[in-house]
Image (tube, rainbow, N blue to C red):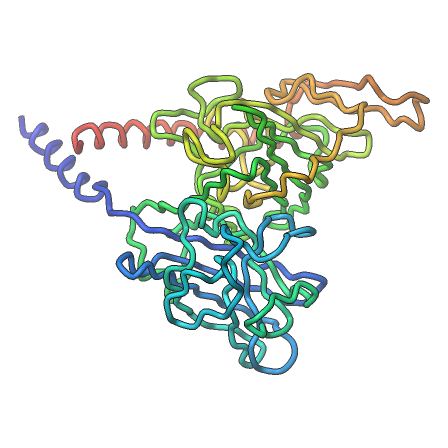
Length: 433
């Protein structure tokens, strides 16, 4: 009987830690230099005051060359770094201006004015009132944030002025807000980020991969809406080990502020879903399986069409916009942590409807994608004398036998520990509800 009393006490104590802690709205992005400008930094945009419809922008930047003074910041239409479009707005009658602390409901959502450079740095927090949101069609989530070389004249956007740095605004992971950043004032441990984005007009999305922890894995991931289906395509992914399959997933947060890949959080999912491979109908929303189709030169390709994730415009489970794509070092065999560490990541944002996903070479063999029990490698057309309609296949045994043994042991231990945590969590939540 004493053991039962102790169990009740422990469960009650645990409940005090797992109760919901409220919600917040926050977007973030890690600035990437353009044309070797040397500019780096982070941006946080967050709901500060619901009653005033006030959103604050906190920007911390280093490496800005030139004299002290103002530089323009703005949010552009598309997440395509090459063709980002113009200032984001949902209403053609809205005007371009420099909002400075007063309500600006008639100002374009993406017209953010200037920030001040002091000694090659920017460290500033600016308030915006009644101008944009982080939910719905006026949300900045999934759009491209830019820092310009010159100051804004506050009357007309200068699209010719060079961009020093840019980044796609994604759903922030409040757990990783840097100590001392003003954005931390609206986050409490366990709170849920309610930021999202919808667009009835746009049916395409894009994601530009960058390497994690020295892994130079780069490329693009494309999302095309086709009725109730979304086609996910990855073209010419460079830097992957072509003797292996590599897990690919959509993660909960579009937060790549940490270059080690941890700030993206876990897989995007609903509460009742468990990890698995397509086409399982109980898998997590973000479970896309594996990449295992290679060209003869090592470039990797992926394509899979599914109606499991809802639509880009935001029906059903919400939208993929503002989440992230992560590629892993090993094959996902449908069990937790089988895919090991993360090697590349990107934030999913809107793409122009008229931009077409690049076509695959006809020789690429996607027959085992996305389960990828075997890898496929297309032949070199210059040596086969053909267009390459056939390819070689091999079983995905993973790395060398030594590495496989070590990884398998680690994965098994992680799996056992994960099962223990999940079981404990279920037990606690059952009694806490």
